[in-house]
Length: 453
Image (tube, rainbow, N blue to C red):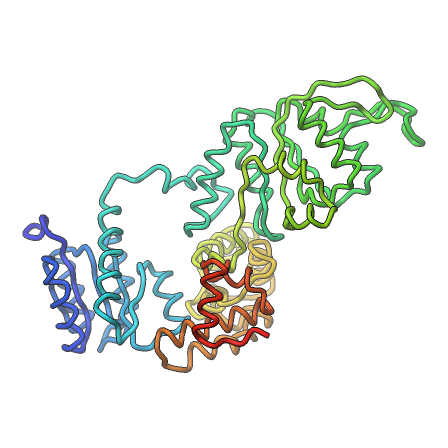
């Protein structure tokens, strides 16, 4: 970018001269160098001679389409911020363009202020890409057990690294299958206790009497069948980390005893009066909302606040769709190697279906799905016909997005309606999936006249 190095360079690629020239006029007024191209081939020729900071790229082009141009641009100049332009907004094209590395997409017809906002966002991205990497934005590199590049997962990685060096109690929340134990182990592995034991107990797996003995141990003769003194899991975890998986399943009696352990850092074996000093770091997880559990009286409020010193929420997979391709490819590689299979990857159509499915079982369900495909199906590429019926049969739910052309406002309205149906009208959950607060959702529901009853 020799002659353009002191000014941002922008390329506009569109076969419609009115669109091309209109965008160029807006951007030139801001003092940026602007080039235009009416085809994908000419755009790539310009980019090869002089890389651009930002590219506005139409999806529908004569000859080479915008998706292929995007693929080649990102391969040769990954620092370039690419904004896709489309007159036909669909979920499929949105997912595919983001998966291939586009920063965002602009829907025709668009307003000048929409264009300016998008340009500013793209230039910020281009500038940040040219800087030395911010260690806080690359926090997932030394947490190999967790995979993701979405903003939600970046936040999780950052919290793990900030929490790990301390001895503070951590509460990990999230739906089943999101990887809560993986987060707990990552915190332990990055902590000063990494060379000590990590002990995990599934609080839903044992009845109360057995759980108490497992945790605290017991002395010989303390109950029927106690033929010898037994060391409990707390003792085994001493100087290490103790993980309570699904802690909401603890009985009130065990909750009270655990609270004393956290407060006093000591415990007694079942049947003993001798206090044993304890040096452990406690991490807990729950797939239930513990605030609701405290309101219902099934979980102690004082224990909740003792546990929630450092809260970490793991997002469900449907809230980080951009991570699905990374996870799918990881599991394909994992089970190809494990099963000695020569699976090369997954087709674009099959990946779109995976990205469109809601994954109620989250990452665990996705992993089991890929494992099952590699066991039962043949072929080097996973295609739609290889996917389970419960995924492929859901295509109809998305037909409203892929078979009609409509304005961005209509797209937003229909998407809100779609999510509301999926959540059975639960506004808080709908707002979380949409990435907005509940008040904003209520405003949009009223604005679009959406019926929620």
